[in-house]
Length: 114
Length: 113
Image (cartoon, rainbow over all chains, first blue to last red; front, side, top):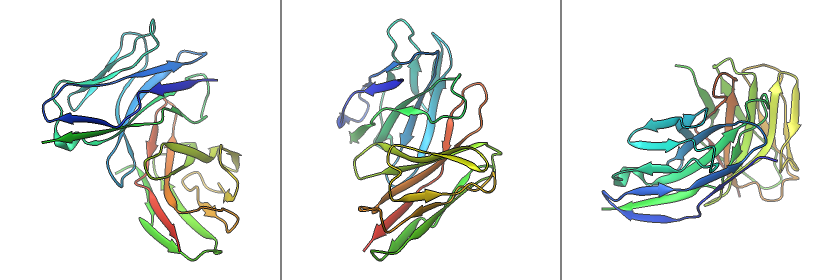
Protein backbone atom coordinates (compact mmCIF):
# COMPACT_ATOMS: atom_id res chain seq x y z
CA UNK A 1 0.00 0.00 0.00
CA UNK A 2 0.86 3.68 -0.03
CA UNK A 3 3.42 4.91 2.50
CA UNK A 4 5.30 8.03 3.59
CA UNK A 5 8.79 8.08 5.09
CA UNK A 6 10.16 11.21 6.68
CA UNK A 7 13.41 11.87 8.47
CA UNK A 8 13.44 11.09 12.14
CA UNK A 9 13.94 13.84 14.62
CA UNK A 10 14.36 15.61 16.70
CA UNK A 11 15.97 18.33 14.64
CA UNK A 12 17.56 21.17 16.58
CA UNK A 13 18.61 24.35 14.79
CA UNK A 14 19.76 27.82 15.73
CA UNK A 15 17.60 30.75 14.76
CA UNK A 16 18.12 31.85 11.11
CA UNK A 17 19.52 28.47 10.10
CA UNK A 18 18.40 26.66 6.93
CA UNK A 19 15.87 23.87 7.40
CA UNK A 20 15.35 20.73 5.35
CA UNK A 21 13.05 17.90 6.42
CA UNK A 22 13.14 15.00 3.99
CA UNK A 23 10.01 13.18 2.88
CA UNK A 24 9.71 10.36 0.36
CA UNK A 25 6.62 8.45 -0.62
CA UNK A 26 5.44 5.24 -2.22
CA UNK A 27 2.13 5.32 -4.04
CA UNK A 28 0.45 3.21 -6.67
CA UNK A 29 -1.55 6.14 -8.00
CA UNK A 30 -0.73 9.79 -8.56
CA UNK A 31 -1.11 11.36 -5.13
CA UNK A 32 -1.54 14.83 -3.76
CA UNK A 33 1.16 15.67 -1.21
CA UNK A 34 0.95 17.73 1.98
CA UNK A 35 2.93 19.10 4.87
CA UNK A 36 1.10 19.64 8.15
CA UNK A 37 2.41 21.42 11.24
CA UNK A 38 1.42 20.73 14.85
CA UNK A 39 2.25 23.24 17.58
CA UNK A 40 2.35 21.99 21.18
CA UNK A 41 -1.08 21.03 22.49
CA UNK A 42 -2.86 21.80 19.24
CA UNK A 43 -4.33 19.99 16.25
CA UNK A 44 -2.63 19.68 12.88
CA UNK A 45 -2.69 22.63 10.50
CA UNK A 46 -2.21 22.31 6.77
CA UNK A 47 1.05 24.10 5.96
CA UNK A 48 1.33 23.55 2.20
CA UNK A 49 0.24 21.22 -0.58
CA UNK A 50 0.95 20.15 -4.16
CA UNK A 51 -1.07 18.11 -6.58
CA UNK A 52 1.17 17.36 -9.57
CA UNK A 53 4.78 16.90 -10.58
CA UNK A 54 6.99 20.01 -10.27
CA UNK A 55 4.30 21.88 -8.32
CA UNK A 56 5.79 23.98 -5.55
CA UNK A 57 3.73 24.50 -2.43
CA UNK A 58 4.65 27.46 -0.26
CA UNK A 59 3.40 29.16 2.90
CA UNK A 60 4.92 31.23 5.74
CA UNK A 61 8.39 30.98 4.17
CA UNK A 62 8.23 27.19 3.88
CA UNK A 63 8.46 25.50 0.48
CA UNK A 64 8.24 21.97 -0.91
CA UNK A 65 8.43 20.76 -4.50
CA UNK A 66 6.64 17.66 -5.79
CA UNK A 67 9.39 15.55 -7.38
CA UNK A 68 7.87 12.59 -9.20
CA UNK A 69 11.20 11.24 -10.44
CA UNK A 70 12.56 10.90 -6.91
CA UNK A 71 9.13 10.43 -5.22
CA UNK A 72 9.99 13.17 -2.77
CA UNK A 73 8.43 16.26 -1.20
CA UNK A 74 11.13 17.75 1.02
CA UNK A 75 10.22 20.69 3.26
CA UNK A 76 12.59 23.69 3.28
CA UNK A 77 12.83 27.08 4.91
CA UNK A 78 15.64 29.52 4.41
CA UNK A 79 15.74 31.07 7.88
CA UNK A 80 13.93 29.43 10.79
CA UNK A 81 12.55 31.26 13.81
CA UNK A 82 11.93 30.12 17.37
CA UNK A 83 8.21 30.24 16.55
CA UNK A 84 8.73 27.47 13.96
CA UNK A 85 9.37 24.97 16.73
CA UNK A 86 6.73 22.29 16.17
CA UNK A 87 6.17 18.79 14.79
CA UNK A 88 5.94 18.52 11.01
CA UNK A 89 4.06 15.73 9.24
CA UNK A 90 4.34 14.77 5.59
CA UNK A 91 1.23 13.12 4.09
CA UNK A 92 -0.27 11.91 0.85
CA UNK A 93 -3.73 11.45 -0.55
CA UNK A 94 -4.41 9.14 -3.45
CA UNK A 95 -6.93 11.10 -5.46
CA UNK A 96 -8.54 7.89 -6.69
CA UNK A 97 -9.12 6.62 -3.17
CA UNK A 98 -12.19 8.71 -2.42
CA UNK A 99 -12.61 9.50 1.25
CA UNK A 100 -10.13 7.01 2.67
CA UNK A 101 -7.74 8.57 5.22
CA UNK A 102 -4.54 10.37 4.31
CA UNK A 103 -1.32 8.42 4.75
CA UNK A 104 0.92 10.20 7.25
CA UNK A 105 4.61 10.00 8.05
CA UNK A 106 5.63 9.62 11.68
CA UNK A 107 6.39 13.29 12.15
CA UNK A 108 9.60 15.24 12.69
CA UNK A 109 10.03 17.41 15.77
CA UNK A 110 11.84 20.69 15.14
CA UNK A 111 13.31 22.77 17.94
CA UNK A 112 14.71 26.20 17.12
CA UNK A 113 16.90 27.85 19.73
CA UNK A 114 17.64 31.56 19.98
CA UNK B 1 -16.23 30.58 10.31
CA UNK B 2 -16.18 27.05 8.95
CA UNK B 3 -14.23 24.49 10.85
CA UNK B 4 -14.09 21.54 13.20
CA UNK B 5 -14.82 21.80 16.90
CA UNK B 6 -13.90 19.30 19.57
CA UNK B 7 -15.11 19.57 23.11
CA UNK B 8 -14.00 19.67 25.77
CA UNK B 9 -10.32 20.59 25.40
CA UNK B 10 -9.42 18.63 28.56
CA UNK B 11 -11.35 15.69 29.96
CA UNK B 12 -10.77 13.69 33.12
CA UNK B 13 -12.43 10.38 33.91
CA UNK B 14 -12.07 7.64 36.44
CA UNK B 15 -10.85 4.26 35.34
CA UNK B 16 -13.70 1.95 34.29
CA UNK B 17 -15.98 4.72 33.04
CA UNK B 18 -17.01 5.16 29.42
CA UNK B 19 -16.49 8.65 28.02
CA UNK B 20 -17.70 10.28 24.80
CA UNK B 21 -15.64 12.84 22.89
CA UNK B 22 -17.48 15.29 20.68
CA UNK B 23 -16.54 16.26 17.12
CA UNK B 24 -18.62 18.63 15.02
CA UNK B 25 -17.88 20.12 11.58
CA UNK B 26 -19.70 22.77 9.54
CA UNK B 27 -17.61 22.30 6.39
CA UNK B 28 -20.24 20.07 4.76
CA UNK B 29 -17.64 17.30 4.47
CA UNK B 30 -18.75 13.74 3.84
CA UNK B 31 -15.83 12.02 5.56
CA UNK B 32 -14.69 12.24 9.18
CA UNK B 33 -11.83 10.59 11.09
CA UNK B 34 -10.61 9.94 14.64
CA UNK B 35 -6.93 9.66 15.54
CA UNK B 36 -5.07 8.97 18.73
CA UNK B 37 -1.74 10.59 19.52
CA UNK B 38 0.49 9.58 22.41
CA UNK B 39 3.25 11.86 23.74
CA UNK B 40 6.03 12.29 21.22
CA UNK B 41 4.35 9.93 18.78
CA UNK B 42 2.64 10.15 15.42
CA UNK B 43 -1.01 9.67 14.53
CA UNK B 44 -2.86 6.37 14.79
CA UNK B 45 -6.22 5.95 13.08
CA UNK B 46 -9.05 4.72 15.31
CA UNK B 47 -12.19 4.90 13.13
CA UNK B 48 -13.35 6.74 10.06
CA UNK B 49 -16.62 7.39 8.30
CA UNK B 50 -16.86 8.10 4.58
CA UNK B 51 -20.56 8.86 4.65
CA UNK B 52 -23.46 9.18 7.08
CA UNK B 53 -24.56 5.91 8.73
CA UNK B 54 -21.35 4.14 7.72
CA UNK B 55 -18.01 3.80 9.47
CA UNK B 56 -14.94 1.60 9.33
CA UNK B 57 -12.32 0.45 11.80
CA UNK B 58 -8.87 1.92 11.64
CA UNK B 59 -5.65 0.48 12.99
CA UNK B 60 -6.50 0.63 16.70
CA UNK B 61 -10.30 0.34 16.99
CA UNK B 62 -10.37 -2.04 19.96
CA UNK B 63 -11.92 -0.40 23.01
CA UNK B 64 -13.52 2.41 21.01
CA UNK B 65 -16.90 2.92 19.36
CA UNK B 66 -18.37 5.57 17.05
CA UNK B 67 -21.63 6.60 15.43
CA UNK B 68 -22.41 8.76 12.42
CA UNK B 69 -26.08 9.66 12.51
CA UNK B 70 -25.59 13.19 11.14
CA UNK B 71 -23.21 14.50 8.51
CA UNK B 72 -21.79 17.15 10.83
CA UNK B 73 -21.20 14.95 13.89
CA UNK B 74 -18.90 11.99 14.61
CA UNK B 75 -18.68 11.25 18.35
CA UNK B 76 -16.11 8.83 19.73
CA UNK B 77 -16.76 6.72 22.83
CA UNK B 78 -13.78 5.47 24.77
CA UNK B 79 -15.01 2.39 26.58
CA UNK B 80 -13.74 0.75 29.74
CA UNK B 81 -12.30 -2.00 27.51
CA UNK B 82 -9.63 0.40 26.24
CA UNK B 83 -6.60 -0.51 28.33
CA UNK B 84 -4.63 2.74 28.03
CA UNK B 85 -7.09 5.51 27.17
CA UNK B 86 -5.02 8.47 28.35
CA UNK B 87 -3.99 10.26 25.14
CA UNK B 88 -4.60 13.23 22.85
CA UNK B 89 -7.52 12.61 20.47
CA UNK B 90 -7.81 14.38 17.14
CA UNK B 91 -10.82 14.56 14.85
CA UNK B 92 -10.54 15.43 11.15
CA UNK B 93 -12.76 15.76 8.09
CA UNK B 94 -12.31 15.69 4.33
CA UNK B 95 -14.56 16.90 1.55
CA UNK B 96 -12.82 15.88 -1.66
CA UNK B 97 -11.91 18.54 -4.19
CA UNK B 98 -8.73 19.02 -6.17
CA UNK B 99 -6.32 18.32 -3.32
CA UNK B 100 -8.42 16.05 -1.10
CA UNK B 101 -6.77 17.33 2.08
CA UNK B 102 -7.91 16.67 5.64
CA UNK B 103 -8.79 19.40 8.12
CA UNK B 104 -8.22 18.85 11.82
CA UNK B 105 -9.92 19.97 15.00
CA UNK B 106 -8.02 21.34 18.03
CA UNK B 107 -8.01 18.00 19.87
CA UNK B 108 -9.19 16.68 23.24
CA UNK B 109 -6.73 15.58 25.89
CA UNK B 110 -8.24 12.69 27.84
CA UNK B 111 -6.75 11.70 31.18
CA UNK B 112 -8.02 8.62 32.95
CA UNK B 113 -7.24 8.60 36.65
